[in-house]
Length: 279
Image (cartoon, rainbow, N blue to C red; front, top):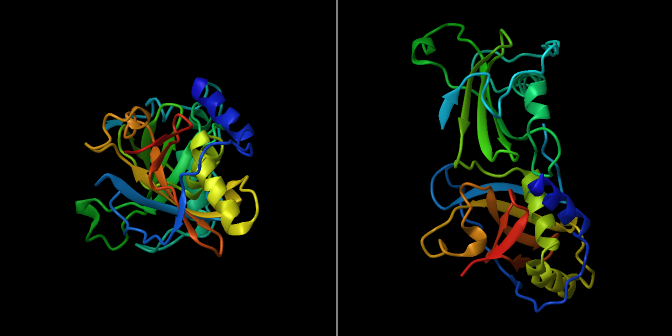
C-alpha cells in the first residue's frame, strides 16, 4: 500500500515546478546498443514518443504468488480463437490477445500491480515459445507462446507458457532479480516520477531553455529507458541500493524534434517511485 500511495502521490505532483539549480545539459547523445535481458549493468529498453502506451527463479505451479488461481467460484470463458498462425509463423494479433488473456487470469489481475500502481501486472513481452527437443522434427509441432510480465506488488518477473491449441497454461516460472527491458509505459512513468522529484528540476530548466515552454508531462519528450543495475562504483549510493531487486531505469531524454537533454546521471526506481543521483 505504501508503494502504491507513493506512486499515486507522485502523479499528482508531476506538474509542480521545483526551484533548485539545474543539473541537466542539452547534449548530443549516442544511444548504446541493446544488451541482453539479464546481462550487464544496463539493458536497452523501450523508446516512447508522445507518451505512447504499450499494453497489450524457481518454477512454480498455478499456486505461485504472482500467478495465483482464479477466485473460488469464478469461471472465465475461453477467449475466442480468432486468426491463427501456422508452424513457426509469428503470433497473429488475435493470438497475442488470446494468449495474454489466458496467461493473466482473474486471480493474477486482482493480486498484482502494474507500473502505475493499477490492478493487473505490467506485460513486458509475448513471444512464440521455443519447441521442445523432441518436437523439432515434427511436421506439425504445437504452437506455444510465452508471456512475461512484471508484478510491481511483489517485485517479481513471471513467465507463463500457453499452449495455443489447447488454451492451457503449461508452465509458470516466477523469478526475482531478473529485469527484462522496460516497456513504453514504464519509460513514460519514469519520466513522470522524475518530473515530480526535485532532481527533475534540471531537466525542466533545460527543456524551457530549448523550447521556451514549461515541461510538465512525459508526452513533451521522446524518451528511451534502459534497465539499471547497481555496479561497484555506485553500490553504496543510498538511492540505488535496491536496484536489481527493484525495477530501476536510466533515461535518455530528447526534446521532440529538438536536442537531447542529458539525465544519464539519474536513476529512477519504478518500484519505489523515487529518483536518485549517481556518482
